[in-house]
Image (cartoon, rainbow, N blue to C red; front, side, top):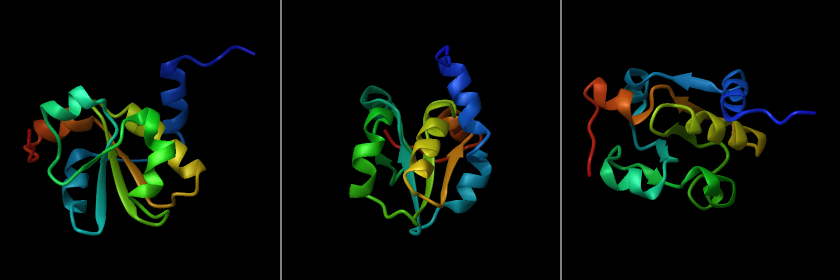
Length: 118
């Protein structure tokens, strides 16, 4: 059996996860919703959504339980919406029930005027 390419893994994950647009994500911003940034540290240091929590994709499975319960509403983002889809898929497989991947990532967020901090 051939391993799936990265693009195939992302496409496969996107068939199972809920995606929200950056505009939809803006309407979700509240104390009840956790914004999770799964980009690498150098990306996080450039710009991020205010109040977001940073856990790089490779560490999500081992660290997410330290910051969120399985029923917490979580919007996951990355640069363009691919790593966030993989993170959402992995979290759903681990029992998280209220997660969404933000399509277009932080770039899309900035394109529609979303607030950022650096």
